[in-house]
Structures are given as C-alpha cells and as structure tokens.
Image (cartoon, rainbow, N blue to C red; front, side):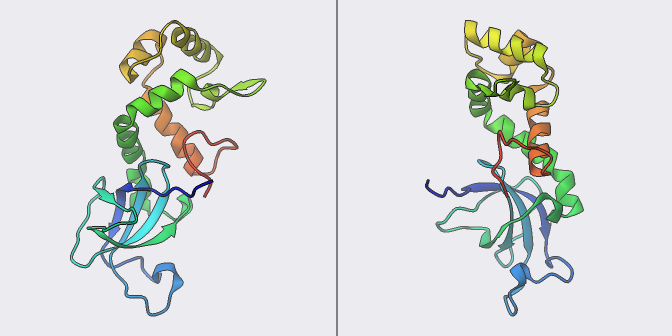
Length: 188
C-alpha cells in the first residue's frame, strides 16, 4: 500500500520558543525554531513541525505540510500522540476538527451513505457517539430511499442531532486512543 501523507494541516498551537526543555525530535544541535502542533485535514494526523523563521501562526491557520515547497513550515518533526499535545492544542482540537469536518462535508456524507456493519452485531454508524440502533436504522432506511446530500439533509430526514458535533466527538475519541475501531483516523 502506498504511504500517504497529509498535504494540509490546521494549526493547533504555535510555540515561538519551542517547548520548554524539549529539543525538537531529540536531535542535539538542531536549530530550535518555533514549534507548531498541527492536525492534518485528510487523516486527522497529529503532527509537530518547525515553522520558518519569522513566520507567526495562529490556531486554525491552514498550512501546507506536503512534500513540495512549504511556505510556513521548515521541517515536519513527526507524528505525535494526543497526550503530547499542549494544553492549548487540546483546547483547540475540537473546533479544528469541526472545521475540517464541515470543509469535507461531502466525504462524511458519503460515509453515512455507504458505511456498513463492522461485525455481525455492530454497524459502523453505532461507533459514532449518540447513534444507537434507533438512529442507525433511521439512517439506513432513509439512505436506501435516497442518498443524503448534506449534513442538513441527514439531520432533517433522520432527526439526528448535530452530525458535525457527533463526528467531531468520534474523531476526538479515536485520537485520544479510546477506541478499538478507527473510522476516521489512522493509528499513531
């Protein structure tokens, strides 16, 4: 399988002087720069990177982290776990995830339109907080009549409360490592 990387990410925290007492990636002599904690917009990968000198970033800025000429980021230090996020980054995480979910509405609606059972007794939809058997069957019955077109359409036809918030909660659980199954994120 090809290794796929994040192309764009959202800033969660910007530490102009790095993390106190932490050398980036433990490399002695590596020029300390402004440390940035980010969340990727495709796989929700948590990343740590060094910003280019003179660049100032704020939470929710969207930056290019792909392989080609990066404007704001010098170096991707690597993937990090949820527990390595700063307190500020953890606070920004839910709103950054919601923003990504809204920007990728079509992808998530496709998920609701096509997702299947994971085991004979459990449907992938049931892994989303707030979706039990009742909502699961409403989603399945409604999508069989006609595929959902938007979060509004999904909400109106199934009475599912705030799908963006429910998906965000699910992604938070996966990132925090509280889940056996991953619907939207990759293992750390």
